[in-house]
Image (cartoon, rainbow, N blue to C red; front, side, top):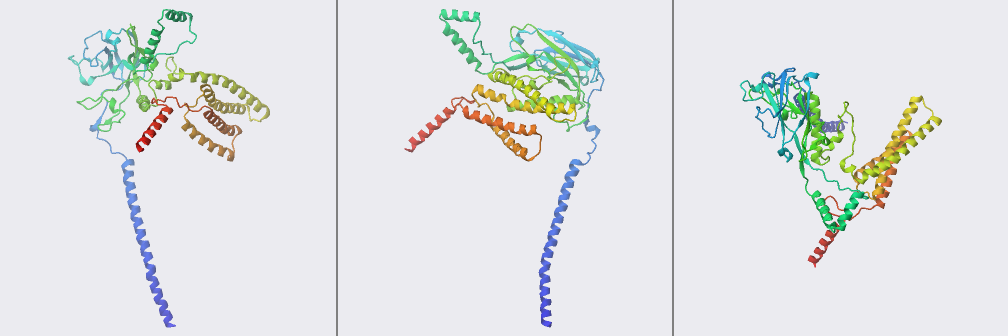
Length: 502
């Protein structure tokens, strides 16, 4: 029995040595994971302390602040000059507005001043000249003229603003009455009788060729100048001024502090308010206003204007389209104003759209009224309020369906679907398929389930119209090429390759 025991002991010893290796490997793996965890915690603590730890107080000597105090009385001068740089303070004819004792950014009637006047343009301004408004503020009792003995640089600040904007001239309206009137008919007949009809046609062709040329830029007068003093008393660090504020901050070089910010508010200056300047203009209206503006409102205007500029740079928004999104302030109470894009308002699409919406609105009112009466007679409701809500809900569902129908009528009248964004519509159709699947498996109101399938119906009709109205290969795209041209070029290239091969 001894040998088996010895053998067994030896086997047990060998098994122990073999079992120690996995234990050592596990210990090494556990030690490595511990080190990795410690490193991760250290890295996390570093970044957390970097970004979330309380900031050290900045030395007050390294901060810049506003040179003026809130409520401090200011005097204002506004000069109009055709020169961008202004130093002719002795010219009384250039001074068009002077106000005294304006409290700096205090919210009251005494902080807002207005003036309306007539400006008589010079001959140079009529010939695409320029005009600038030079606005100066100073502590009451101090002059804005640097040549004055009492002038103090730290007590005076100003800014220049262009009163004239240069924009592309609107294209001439080529539309004409197909029936015409009597005088025009007589004129055309007389022209034909004298044998000069060809000259008239040539003049029309020349006019069309001018319209198709490069844009002509003309000067437009800004009838409203709104001067806002920004309520900003923030103490900024020398190298910690926010990037959206830094371009507007006017630093005084000797002290390093900043002057009050002057903001020329053009947010409510819509393009349709601008006045074209030409030889026939003898006088121009000018409405002036000065008043305070809060820091938050100023930043909001800057952010909105910046977003408009980004869209214009990308080509997703044309010049002047931003006015379509702005609250109308022609009356006492700002009101929302909706208007169509100029390119949309002057084509056939709007005409067909109006016709479709006219008759579809009748259908909308009729169906909503019928459903409301049916619901009142045959369905049960908790109260009259519940019935009104259900009726309004049905109106919303029906309105969403009818809003998609005018496009079908427009496609039918134009006999074309080339203007439709098919990629976006395909994407929406895929989303609609997902909604269809959920409409079968999820319990939902009947009207909502029907609204899911209405999108399918409209899209199927779109597909039918795409099959009925094929793409015109002769149609010229925005690059000046047509489908047949590309096919012809491809065929010509293929023939040349065959010749070279042979």
